[in-house]
Length: 180
Image 1: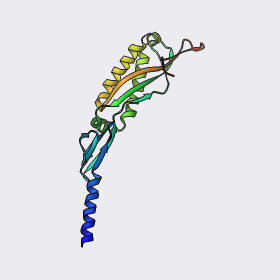
Image 2: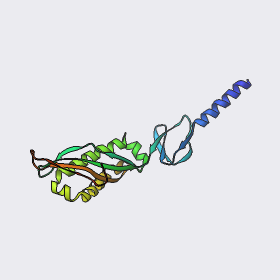
Image 3: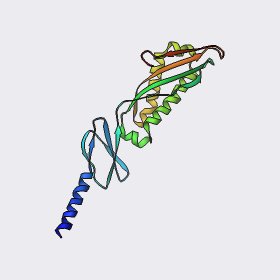
Image 4: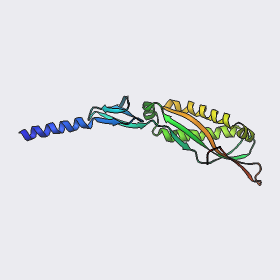
Protein backbone atom coordinates (compact mmCIF):
# COMPACT_ATOMS: atom_id res chain seq x y z
CA UNK A 1 0.00 0.00 0.00
CA UNK A 2 2.88 2.35 0.81
CA UNK A 3 4.42 1.68 -2.60
CA UNK A 4 1.20 2.69 -4.36
CA UNK A 5 0.87 5.84 -2.26
CA UNK A 6 4.56 6.66 -2.86
CA UNK A 7 4.09 6.09 -6.61
CA UNK A 8 1.08 8.40 -6.70
CA UNK A 9 3.00 11.11 -4.79
CA UNK A 10 5.95 10.74 -7.15
CA UNK A 11 3.62 11.00 -10.18
CA UNK A 12 1.96 14.14 -8.77
CA UNK A 13 5.40 15.64 -8.07
CA UNK A 14 6.52 14.96 -11.66
CA UNK A 15 3.32 16.51 -13.06
CA UNK A 16 3.91 19.60 -10.92
CA UNK A 17 7.52 19.83 -12.14
CA UNK A 18 6.34 19.63 -15.75
CA UNK A 19 4.57 22.98 -15.22
CA UNK A 20 7.80 24.84 -14.49
CA UNK A 21 9.17 26.68 -17.53
CA UNK A 22 12.44 28.57 -17.74
CA UNK A 23 12.12 31.59 -20.04
CA UNK A 24 15.35 33.13 -21.38
CA UNK A 25 15.91 36.89 -21.39
CA UNK A 26 15.17 37.28 -25.10
CA UNK A 27 12.10 35.02 -25.13
CA UNK A 28 8.51 35.43 -24.06
CA UNK A 29 6.20 32.59 -23.07
CA UNK A 30 2.71 32.80 -24.58
CA UNK A 31 0.32 30.75 -22.43
CA UNK A 32 -2.84 29.04 -23.71
CA UNK A 33 -5.52 27.73 -21.35
CA UNK A 34 -7.89 25.29 -23.04
CA UNK A 35 -6.86 26.76 -26.41
CA UNK A 36 -7.39 30.42 -25.48
CA UNK A 37 -4.47 32.80 -25.04
CA UNK A 38 -4.40 34.07 -21.46
CA UNK A 39 -1.29 36.23 -21.87
CA UNK A 40 2.45 36.18 -22.08
CA UNK A 41 5.13 35.95 -19.44
CA UNK A 42 8.62 37.38 -19.30
CA UNK A 43 12.04 35.97 -18.48
CA UNK A 44 12.76 33.80 -15.47
CA UNK A 45 11.11 30.78 -13.94
CA UNK A 46 7.41 30.60 -14.80
CA UNK A 47 4.72 28.19 -13.65
CA UNK A 48 1.99 27.00 -15.99
CA UNK A 49 -0.81 24.73 -14.83
CA UNK A 50 0.13 21.20 -15.90
CA UNK A 51 -2.33 19.30 -18.14
CA UNK A 52 -4.46 22.47 -18.57
CA UNK A 53 -2.10 25.13 -19.93
CA UNK A 54 0.05 24.91 -23.03
CA UNK A 55 2.87 27.31 -23.74
CA UNK A 56 4.83 28.57 -26.73
CA UNK A 57 8.20 30.34 -26.68
CA UNK A 58 8.50 33.45 -28.87
CA UNK A 59 11.92 34.94 -29.70
CA UNK A 60 11.89 38.75 -29.41
CA UNK A 61 15.44 39.45 -30.62
CA UNK A 62 16.02 41.63 -33.66
CA UNK A 63 16.19 39.55 -36.83
CA UNK A 64 17.84 40.66 -40.07
CA UNK A 65 16.76 39.25 -43.41
CA UNK A 66 17.71 40.11 -46.95
CA UNK A 67 15.24 39.86 -49.77
CA UNK A 68 16.46 37.88 -52.74
CA UNK A 69 17.37 40.08 -55.74
CA UNK A 70 14.19 41.31 -57.41
CA UNK A 71 13.87 42.52 -61.00
CA UNK A 72 11.42 45.40 -61.28
CA UNK A 73 10.70 47.98 -63.96
CA UNK A 74 10.62 51.57 -62.75
CA UNK A 75 7.97 54.11 -63.70
CA UNK A 76 10.24 55.34 -66.53
CA UNK A 77 10.57 51.77 -67.93
CA UNK A 78 14.13 51.06 -66.77
CA UNK A 79 14.74 47.53 -65.48
CA UNK A 80 16.17 47.52 -61.97
CA UNK A 81 17.52 44.61 -59.97
CA UNK A 82 17.75 45.21 -56.24
CA UNK A 83 17.72 43.60 -52.83
CA UNK A 84 17.02 45.08 -49.41
CA UNK A 85 17.94 44.32 -45.82
CA UNK A 86 15.17 44.42 -43.23
CA UNK A 87 15.72 44.48 -39.44
CA UNK A 88 12.67 43.68 -37.32
CA UNK A 89 11.57 42.06 -34.08
CA UNK A 90 8.43 40.79 -32.39
CA UNK A 91 7.15 43.55 -30.13
CA UNK A 92 3.86 41.90 -29.09
CA UNK A 93 4.19 38.12 -28.71
CA UNK A 94 0.46 37.56 -28.19
CA UNK A 95 -0.45 39.27 -31.48
CA UNK A 96 2.41 37.51 -33.27
CA UNK A 97 1.08 34.11 -32.21
CA UNK A 98 -2.63 34.89 -32.65
CA UNK A 99 -2.61 36.83 -35.94
CA UNK A 100 -0.14 35.02 -38.22
CA UNK A 101 1.32 31.54 -38.41
CA UNK A 102 4.90 32.70 -39.10
CA UNK A 103 5.53 36.40 -38.38
CA UNK A 104 9.07 36.28 -39.81
CA UNK A 105 7.97 34.84 -43.17
CA UNK A 106 5.00 37.21 -43.38
CA UNK A 107 7.23 40.20 -42.68
CA UNK A 108 9.61 39.23 -45.49
CA UNK A 109 6.76 38.57 -47.94
CA UNK A 110 5.28 41.97 -47.10
CA UNK A 111 8.73 43.54 -47.48
CA UNK A 112 9.02 41.99 -50.93
CA UNK A 113 5.63 43.38 -51.97
CA UNK A 114 6.28 46.86 -50.55
CA UNK A 115 9.65 46.95 -52.30
CA UNK A 116 8.08 46.05 -55.66
CA UNK A 117 5.36 48.68 -55.25
CA UNK A 118 7.74 51.51 -54.35
CA UNK A 119 10.25 50.78 -57.09
CA UNK A 120 7.55 50.47 -59.76
CA UNK A 121 6.17 53.88 -58.70
CA UNK A 122 9.62 55.55 -58.66
CA UNK A 123 11.90 56.69 -61.44
CA UNK A 124 15.44 55.37 -61.79
CA UNK A 125 16.79 58.83 -60.96
CA UNK A 126 14.78 58.91 -57.71
CA UNK A 127 16.18 55.51 -56.72
CA UNK A 128 19.76 56.69 -57.20
CA UNK A 129 19.42 60.15 -55.66
CA UNK A 130 16.96 59.62 -52.81
CA UNK A 131 18.08 56.28 -51.41
CA UNK A 132 17.94 57.50 -47.80
CA UNK A 133 14.40 58.82 -48.24
CA UNK A 134 13.38 55.60 -49.96
CA UNK A 135 14.77 53.56 -47.04
CA UNK A 136 12.85 55.71 -44.58
CA UNK A 137 9.64 55.48 -46.60
CA UNK A 138 9.99 51.69 -46.93
CA UNK A 139 10.54 51.40 -43.16
CA UNK A 140 7.45 53.46 -42.31
CA UNK A 141 5.21 51.66 -44.80
CA UNK A 142 6.34 48.21 -43.72
CA UNK A 143 5.97 49.17 -40.05
CA UNK A 144 2.36 50.22 -40.58
CA UNK A 145 1.53 46.92 -42.24
CA UNK A 146 3.27 44.65 -39.72
CA UNK A 147 2.19 46.49 -36.57
CA UNK A 148 -1.19 44.73 -36.54
CA UNK A 149 0.47 41.34 -36.08
CA UNK A 150 2.95 42.41 -33.40
CA UNK A 151 6.09 42.92 -35.50
CA UNK A 152 8.09 46.16 -35.30
CA UNK A 153 10.33 47.04 -38.23
CA UNK A 154 13.52 48.78 -37.09
CA UNK A 155 14.96 49.61 -40.52
CA UNK A 156 14.91 48.81 -44.21
CA UNK A 157 17.98 49.48 -46.32
CA UNK A 158 18.51 49.05 -50.05
CA UNK A 159 21.41 46.64 -50.08
CA UNK A 160 22.22 46.35 -53.76
CA UNK A 161 20.90 48.23 -56.77
CA UNK A 162 21.69 47.45 -60.41
CA UNK A 163 20.03 49.02 -63.45
CA UNK A 164 20.40 49.10 -67.22
CA UNK A 165 19.88 52.27 -69.23
CA UNK A 166 18.99 50.41 -72.43
CA UNK A 167 18.50 46.71 -73.16
CA UNK A 168 21.84 46.47 -75.05
CA UNK A 169 23.95 48.68 -72.78
CA UNK A 170 25.96 47.68 -69.74
CA UNK A 171 24.37 47.80 -66.32
CA UNK A 172 25.09 50.19 -63.45
CA UNK A 173 25.60 48.46 -60.11
CA UNK A 174 25.62 50.21 -56.76
CA UNK A 175 26.14 48.60 -53.39
CA UNK A 176 25.38 50.34 -50.13
CA UNK A 177 28.51 51.48 -48.26
CA UNK A 178 29.91 48.86 -45.89
CA UNK A 179 27.83 46.05 -47.32
CA UNK A 180 28.85 43.29 -49.68
